[in-house]
Length: 431
Picture 1: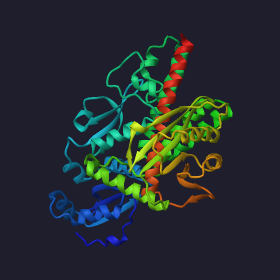
Picture 2: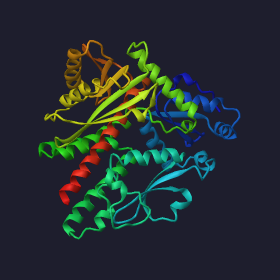
Picture 3: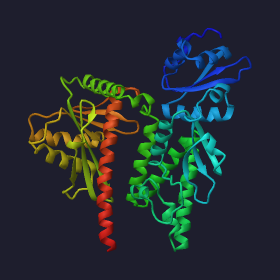
Picture 4: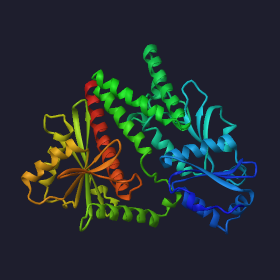
């Protein structure tokens, strides 16, 4: 194999190709850091697989992507297109997994091994994915953006996942409907979700991002604020895939490795904010339903680790339905709890408007405050309140990853509480 000058390779996410004398790919891989991963291939003298790939190759090429997520999609689609010799011959059949969209009136989305592909009629498959962990991560995350059914059997009643928005509209619910017109509307909506999922898996997610933005604007213009909020939340989760590192790496099975990531992120954020210590961090988020049943979450991380026993929920008491006002109410109530351990850092989900409301209100009442920052969206960025400034960070920043992870957990916890309250109200209204 020709000597490769690895200094030419980018330290960016993307896909790399080992090519033979004809230029055909013999092996395709993905990486969150192309240069680092290719160097590992070239320096591995113990693995026979690596030696065989090197012997068959005369050159290496690569394509950069904006994120690990895009690299995953590109790798799977290129392997499916070119069937590189060493991706096929050297893989362990038990570790290669496919995402399959079944060939049904209301398609289901299933995970299958290669040997199962021939046993189940399917209209589309995505893969192979080299890790079951990765495949499950993608299924779990993507259905928070475009909900779909993953049941292996057919049912005529709503499934559990439909109650938390992951299977919506639920095929089981649709099949139990007697109103034909309503059923047809929901069938069209569900099939549209399946089309969007397939488009995302084909690497054309930008089309879906644009469509979702238009849907959100249309819902707002029609004053359907509940639907607009649901689309906004899904849009935020989708955009996050193109911004941050994905933590499904197999090494995360090792608790020591995971602990190392958490410690690194915690230290990076402490250094970024020039804090003498960062032990306890609290993050706050608001979830609302057409201005009603508004709730807030407080999640707690200690030394980079989740501390669920310290989580708290708040029902909004004030009459305002403006996020900054509600966050201010919650933070003022929280500061009165002297029995709770004081945080070193408070993160609020929001940017300028939230910080301009929360920070002065707390400053007027308390002489000593923890460090307070906000995380604004599109793109995600950390903001300071006094003076109001944005801290410039690369999307690969460990400090930004930590804040994003905390924000996402606060959002999940707030949404969980909000859904519970909404369902309780719905039950009362139907009784």
